[in-house]
Length: 439
Ligand code: 5AD
Ligand code: SF4
Image 1 (cartoon, rainbow, N blue to C red):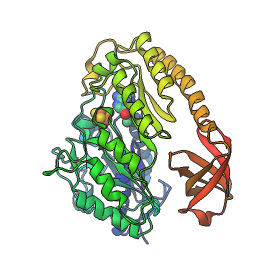
Image 2 (tube, rainbow, N blue to C red):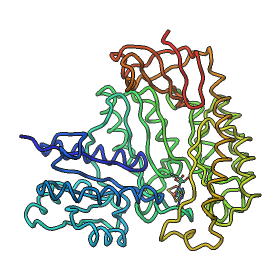
Image 3 (cartoon, rainbow, N blue to C red):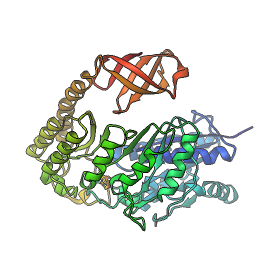
Image 4 (tube, rainbow, N blue to C red):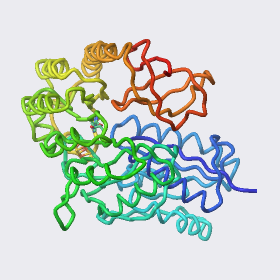
């Protein structure tokens, strides 16, 4: 009988896509997927270290699995991802969670079959980490969740060292994939029915800097735009400091590039932005947004905002509120600042008490949500193009999908439409979703 596996994934799209690669490797070894941990012969945690709560959840889950492992000694338990790139964390796992069998990192997913056989041979905890993550491993296939939309890595790592962020210490230095490898991957996806791709990188606007010739993100978008079968191109994440006029032009001109830009601002206070090492001011950001809105008037803008960075005063926070009102974001991810051991901000004085962070967080979402609702209201009675993604969990007859602007839409229809582009007339706008009917 085939052995069963499950993967629990925390964190960003990069991790989600890594899990798709792990899944492909395991299925090629004969494992089959299960949703249930109790039924699994192999459980993998793909971890995230960006905020403390994701980290704590992993410890909680690993602790809870001690009992299952005792009942089922042949169960293999593996932990990978960003947490494993940090030696002090690996040591905690090795000391306190001795029932973990395999530990690997973000740079050696392709070695998983070897690690599994090493574990079988030695019956010991196998630890394999690539500290120097400069290398790019090509040709790892992925068992993608959907056929009609796919993530494609275009670069790895980050060189920005924002002072709050652990990513440069877990995913290493920035490096870009060769365009020919990216284009080949996307052509293959398109031949197999993929309509929408999301290009992934910590800072896609600096794509190309590590190539030995002159080729940048705008060039890449132009080349992808030519691939038959691809209808929509998305990308994330963009750093405001690197968003060039050339890229804005490319976004405006290329018909397949969606009218959605995720442009993390993090804070509206120039003082805090400086302390975060973001390399732009509030004014720079607002000017950039103005420029984008002028060239692409119906652009949908989303962002990331951190509340309660060390030293954030009431005045600084009010600047964030002022900025979000001026930009009128279509959506936003909001975070409480979380101390990450090893980053510069972790050592800063003036850490903000939790109570104040929570109060500001609430104030921020109270400011954002009515803006989202107002932006969605504009779609009532409009017709939007939707890529149908799935059937609602609660109602077989309700489908959902996204517009080019990234809005989630619910509407009636048959599951045979999944993967198709359909036109939907919007009847009702809500804060986070739109409801409509196919026309
Ligand atoms: N605390 C809170 N949020 C953080 N992010 C990154 N590091 C931290 C941290 N230490 C947020 C940033 C980033 C997003 C992916 O996660 O807003 O853009
Ligand atoms: Fe972290 Fe800043 Fe790099 Fe984004 S750009 S991954 S926030 S260091």
